[in-house]
Image 1 (cartoon, rainbow, N blue to C red):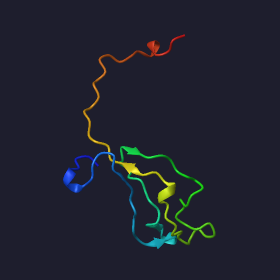
Image 2: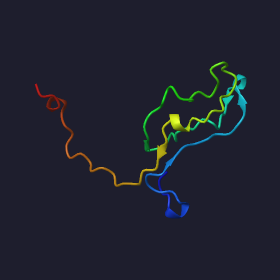
Image 3: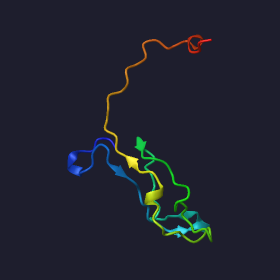
Image 4: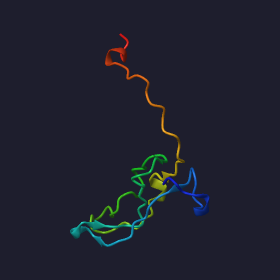
Length: 103
């Protein structure tokens, strides 16, 4: 999420997640469930971890084919907007492996 301007209302440190809408048809391989918040696969940072005791599964405990409509917001991490930064300085000289371990 680089290149965002203040006019979008989104800036550094903004937290967000995706809710994906679509067809729920496990037999056909589609399991869209907007109650389950997803992290951005291209996010440069995320908050916290997953609460595995929370409502993180897309289906109910009783059936793999019935969607769980409980919101997962409190149990999953959020993506975080990270501002652009300059690239790191190149390494002057690679360290030989023989110098990486001190015996």
